[in-house]
Length: 372
Ligand code: GLU
Image (cartoon, rainbow, N blue to C red; front, side):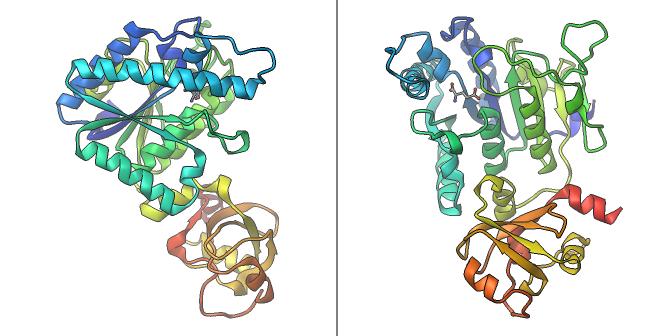
């Protein structure tokens, strides 16, 4: 099987709300226990595991109804406040039965915004792993603000697996993977493997969201593709199947969709930048000469001589988008000038690059289209 190349030394496992909650939202302790047993087996074999678990809001909602004057955002915060404790108590208790310490890490998208916060979080999870404490991550729903929320925990799991250099990410949901139609319909089949050559599978996916989770299959697929393009194998599988995690790791013939990792791996700063598109502070328009240089095989820095226009206000060190004359996004990078200084020196031949190539990521699609 093709996943025989996948590596499971350090893995991230994302558990969706629909996997571990009952129809009324309350936690399904039996299911959580099965998952904990499954993870414990791998843990005992020395696999490093980072869990990303949803279920807090659902668990809280099953407990209480906020008063009528509480708006829906505040209600979700209250549910998360109650539910997160229940969720973690359950995990801590059940992992404890296997002699495993489980610790909680609550993240907001803000934590990924600048490199200092990012490294701080990375250090924290690394220290937990070094001490054999199993990190269980969730979004800090009680304080997250709408415009800076993760699309869902699938996105968060992508951030975490890339940040932690995981070899594989397993996304557990309530279906067996990605289907080429509506699951259960006649003729609909599970897509077993998706790689760079696979056609645009998103067109097959029916966006029926069920239950309590925020994410759907379309976001799962786009996250999975992005993460696989960074060199991490991604599996989407059914978390309601017993021992699905260890079966995937043992390469058993069980149902799942495997997004095959691309062999090229992004490192350090570039990996962080690849997830920074929501944090850009402005954009620069570049001329065709600069575009050709950036999209060529060999990496080059972006010089101000190739920049024709500056959009927005940014400081030196902020992340900006790189756009061509037709308005296509080429990539992004960390600016070495503030917008005012850049504007003053447009088209000038200054020695310090506007974006150094070590701090730049170029959009794969633009690169591929250009090199064809
Ligand atoms: N963080 C949310 C929770 O724990 C779930 C978000 C999602 O559904 O992806 O309930």
